[in-house]
Length: 149
Image 1: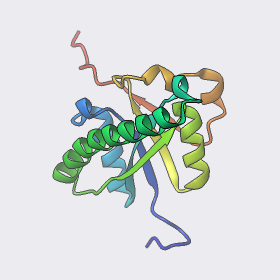
Image 2: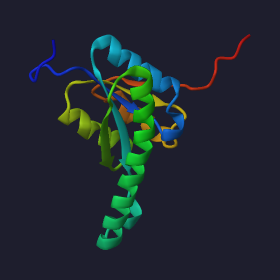
Image 3: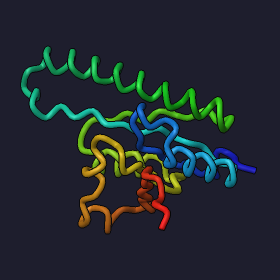
């Protein structure tokens, strides 16, 4: 039984709203169910070009956060309906791998990070030097159907 000293394993899922039925969602949810764990939905807000414009940046941050939450709610609804899990949201600013490292440091119960290769910013998760030093497994899941030969 999990308690506050030994929280349930957390499977972080990196997926866009358009891929709520993706194989990556299935992988993360099946692992969470099998291990008595949780699913966290992760997204980043990237604001590089607006630094220094405080009022514009604040407004943009709020709009991006609201859009990100809307997208994650689509995925969360699918997960709730199909896997009987209630996902947690993790929305951070910055580059995906940097933001993930920050989350992993704050939540040591993270067991894996699962990324669909169809995600808009999937390439940002593939910096080999950074991934080699990643503190938890980073699992890339292709959503392309297997070709039959």
